[in-house]
Image (cartoon, rainbow, N blue to C red; front, side, top):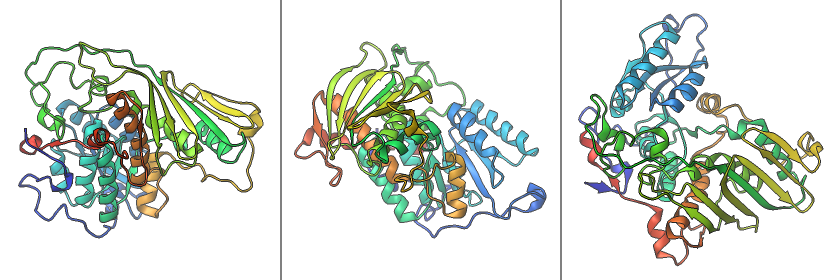
Length: 433
């Protein structure tokens, strides 16, 4: 298997011109004639392509973007033909025409100059490599989270700065009133000085058995699905959504899946959204044996930040609690019941508010950033810093010991074993898919 570390040097198929992936000037949004869109068409409209059309890509991202009047989806891409066809039909039925193309290979989608932006809803291991290729192809990007490694997060930030393209992340939490009110209260001192945070993440006890290798279903481009990940034989359950999340080659389990949600709320409340924890201790970690799962499905981790605030992350159920020197507040369940030592703090208006106004959801925000220069809900730096906190937890569990992190130098001080896990080799086998 051929491997390399730098995504930016990945070669393209012959259909992609040699200079396409170099940084370019910020392109203006495409203007589509009203004869295509009707009399109610806005003067400027973002043309979009969608890559990855599973449940998140179709039922969340695509459905939300189809409701926006200032974008038009003109391309659908997935390595599984049935998913691609389903999304393509949904798009064409929505617009009442046949204007959406089905494109099996994402490289051909990125080569189209009539596409302004892409929405990436692939498995985790493709998020950063594909986002980088898209920005280098002069596309704005909204991508699902998280990053797969610490090093590729910094690579993503650097490419975004170099290209000047918009990059935002598909996470809704900063727009969810429950978590906004909690962070607003804590940042404004309603519980005194923040001391401790407790985060509960869902305990996923499902174990996926090791099944025999079988032929890849007709039409499914499995080599492209694997992409930059190491080769794994195709089995009946390999690419199931919850199965790939439990395989280290593709993801880091619940910690970086659900953790990207609730731990972001924790970092915001601690004014730490642009940095990462400085230490993580492994209290307990359990990885299932004799099965396909090779990441922990139960863990109890203690993160410490530079200001001394601690964050305990435990496999249990969605939950977040904040404890300060003068009180406490929290939310039990996902978008569940808000609680506080005094519920008035969750309804208060703060004159000198130490948090931004609650933003629109991520799909609307992305278009506002591209068209109006709005502030991104989550940008590449936010994604990198939060992913880094969680990935230090994943690395600590791999090593089964406490590790320390320097957010400024982005390294584990004096720890060669941990530093070696900041990055990993990328396969190039998919380039001939």
